[in-house]
Image (cartoon, rainbow, N blue to C red):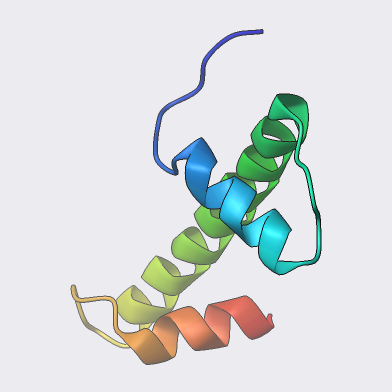
Amino acid sequence: MTQSKRLLPLAAMEKILKLGGAERVSDKAKVALKQVVEEAAEHIAEKAVKLAVHAGRKTVKAGDIKLAAKQ
């Protein structure tokens, strides 16, 4: 398995899964959640940047993120 960019720590993925009710979490589950969350975050970020540029701004604001996540 190749190691991807370390944007989000695996420990955070374990915490999220445990908050969801898991008693134990495998390493593969942490990696899988990390990949899914990073992909979703990347798509949201791309949409948010487009929204900010469309509004004539260089700065991405919280509203851009929220709107991009709804789409």
